[in-house]
Each structure stands twice: as C-alpha cells, then as structure tokens.
Length: 273
Image (cartoon, rainbow, N blue to C red; front, side, top):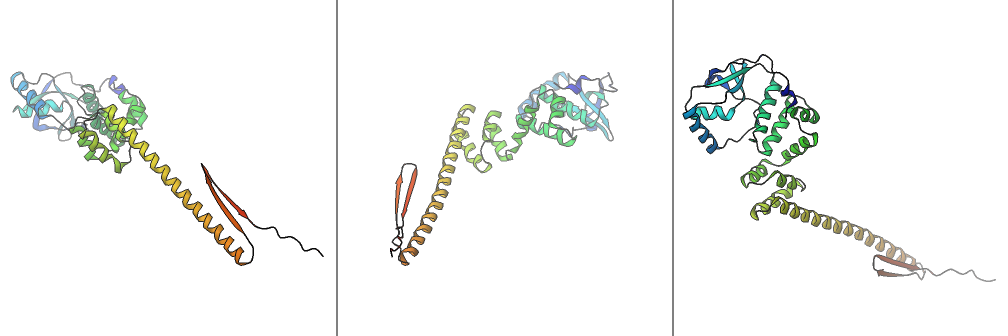
C-alpha cells in the first residue's frame, strides 16, 4: 500500500526490547481518534493471559520514545496493568513515522472514513505534500485522496451523527451534494427513515430537482416583473400621446409561450393645397 515503506528502514534494531510504558509517548500523527471500549477490554484480557504477542514499533525522541505503530496494544497493555511492553526501536523521520502510523491503521481497517480523511489531511498539511504525492506515498489514486478529503467539509455534528447511526461513506458523499444549510434536515430524514445509501441518494436527487424547479420559478418571476415594468412604461407613453391629441391605442394578446403587444398610431396625412 505504501511505496515509501517498501524502502529499508534506516538503523532498525532487530532485537525486541522491553520499554516502560511511561517512557512511550503517543504518535502525534496517530489518525485514529476512537478506540472501542469493548475491543480494548477484550485485548486487555488476552494480554493479561498471554502477554503482548506482537511488539510495538517506536522511535527514539528527546524525552524517551514515540510510538509509531501499536497504539491499541499500548492502551490495552496499560488497561491490563503492564508496566512495560515489547518494542522494536527504529530510526525514522517525522514523515515516515506519520506514514507508518496511517498505513498500519488503513491496512487493519481500524479507521473510519472520517479518520482516514483526517489522516490524509495531516500528511498533506504537516509535510507540505500535494494530493498526488500523498496518493503515491499511500499507494492509492489521487481522486481517492480528493474524495476522502471532501468528507471533511461536513460539520463535526454531522460527522458524529453519521457514525452514530452507522451510515456509510456513500451516505456522507451524498450529503455533500446539498448546500451546507440543507444538510442537517436531510440527514435527520435519512437517519429517522433508516435509508440505505441508494435510497438516500435518490432522496437527495429529489431534493435537488425541487431546488431546480424553485430556481426556475424564481427566474420566471423576475422576467415577468421586468415585462410588467415595460408594459407600464409603454402605457404611460401612450397616455402622454393621447393628451397631445394623438389617437394612439394598444392591444395585448397573451398566447401559449409569448405575449403579443400591438400599438396603433394613426398615420398623419399631409394636407392637399
């Protein structure tokens, strides 16, 4: 998945060493924000019986060690009451550490789609990557990165509701088609009716069609307003002509699709000598 990870890691200690948990700080680029309580409890029970079977990966920093991969195991080990955990110490850059943390979670499918999007954003912003560079590093397409990043346009409130109701990334992308002020009501309907992703897309299609119809009516109303102004201007001009002795007349005929306006002004005939 990650092209950069195919290269050899510099100065990797092959030996597994025990490191006190108190000396290990979390990875600043950890993309995962939610850790299931039941999962951690189950893992903690397993660790209390069998120990940590897969070593964590850390790197040396100024005040000890920073975690690269294995935050779930670290948290579960703390929950199980362990003082130290087995680790492999590597010497990697900040960017490499962030990439490895993100890829570990992506490969294990531990991240929800909003966490994935936030992880992509961190790589791009923190390390000055373009979307294309991030895509190459992660072994995915640039459109896939762009589509993930678009999910971050949703408000935190809407993101939380989408996850709490077990909605999918497809639901979230459908909501993005609506204006921000309309998403909340649409999301309420989707959740209340328990709409599938396909049904949610059809519902949003219907909302967008309604918006187009309303816009069409609004444009027509504007045109009709301009036409009425024109008619009033013409009638005022004809009134002035009549006051001046000109027998001007007008006739307005409305048919399907158009309005015909006929003005008749008598032709002034020259006097014969």
